[in-house]
Length: 96
Length: 244
Image (tube, each protein chain N blue to C red):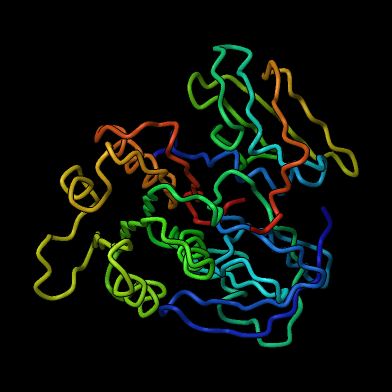
């Protein structure tokens, strides 16, 4: 396996993020603070084979999110995103 | 979201290395096709391991879901789930998870599904959801698989493609083909995309699921064939097939 393909999608962070946020972050649109690309968080490249999670912009590779569990604490760095557009009323589990 | 207790209520082998587990989940809120769950196993010494598995079953209201697990040679969790688990066992489960890689039954546009190996699982939930909802959204599935014996849900997929003209399946075998198969074994390519998927002028929404290298390759082929990146949703497995 090519090391450069050693990532998943932002989707794969949904479980970890659901422990912190009440809305689904992966379907939120975020803007990369570096290149300005506007993408769903689910489309970011996720690196999970480390002590925490690192999500990078699929376009420019800039770090969008870092999340580390330290004992009972969670450290979350979102400085790589200018904003996130959330849809608090749209419940992903609301089955059609 | 909190961990829920899930009882194993059924087991069914899909292939020699993959097993479907039917789970009755306490207070299950229902799900949307394409979502996944995290499964946590805890050893007597307190060591625990969490893995993500796509839900294979259609949304329903009976509090049951199915997951299909491919056994990985060096896996930590998948050998247990495919070989050790028995009916009546309890697992811990978090979910449903993810709101992006989903198909909702009110979506009426044409749908292109592209599966690599066990990437068929969340796409099968979409196919089942379509049937259950009586949807007539035109579906096509391109299913890339190592060999015929590795095909999941074989009979159900055959029934799906026989039921109406708006559900079409194209198989691509990467290592071994059935006898007299017209296309030699090999990864999917531009000619297969041209033959086995919607033309770009149909503007389908595409769902691509499989190992990361497969998803990259399939997505590049779709874009080269004129599909809009904005309409392609992807879900990648890790190199090991276990997502975390």
